[in-house]
Length: 136
Figure 1 (cartoon, rainbow, N blue to C red):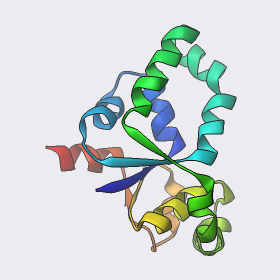
Figure 2 (spheres, one colour):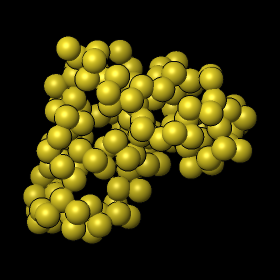
Figure 3 (cartoon, rainbow, N blue to C red):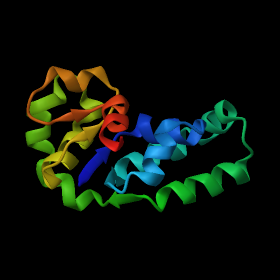
Figure 4 (cartoon, one colour):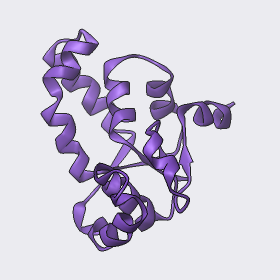
């Protein structure tokens, strides 16, 4: 099953060895991550390192390890869906357009804890709690 993973979910797996990290590594889902958002992780690298208590080397190793379980989706694949995504979520939270566009491109849900996604009804949203339930 394809599933778009939002940046905050991915960052939480980088910060803490938790159920989120375990789900990413063991779920077997085809986790999709928009290329645009990979830059967000780079911008917040030092903040993530500080919160996680890891070294830069440990961060880099973990990032590479987690990326083995995530498919980076190139911008050109989702650009055609940005206008439709804007209509769905753009007025609520423009930062979420890229995730909705990716979900539209692959006709799949989004894994997120972001409450803004709940204000729309076009894309299914799956929480971490949902993910834990699916895997039991």
